[in-house]
Length: 75
Image 1 (cartoon, rainbow, N blue to C red):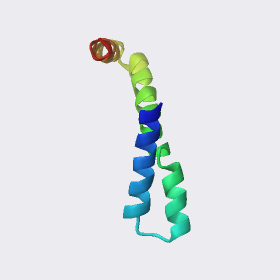
Image 2: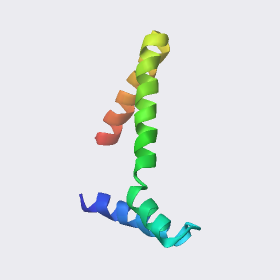
Image 3: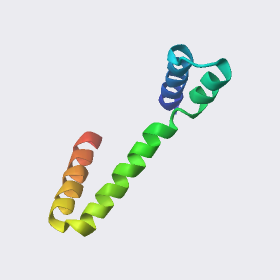
Image 4: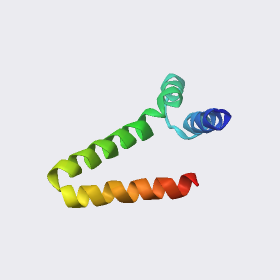
């Protein structure tokens, strides 16, 4: 959990330092910056789920490869 807070704090500091905007806008961006990566992950999950329906063989292969990769990364 400490690692996640450290990543969040680092992202907030970068947003405060590198954003070319007024201070209220900088603060708002620093607070909500994780929404972007989260939206990316949700979009990818939806596309993979849709590929299982549209292209069962390709989608199944993608899911299988993802499961195998996750298993290797966990061990």
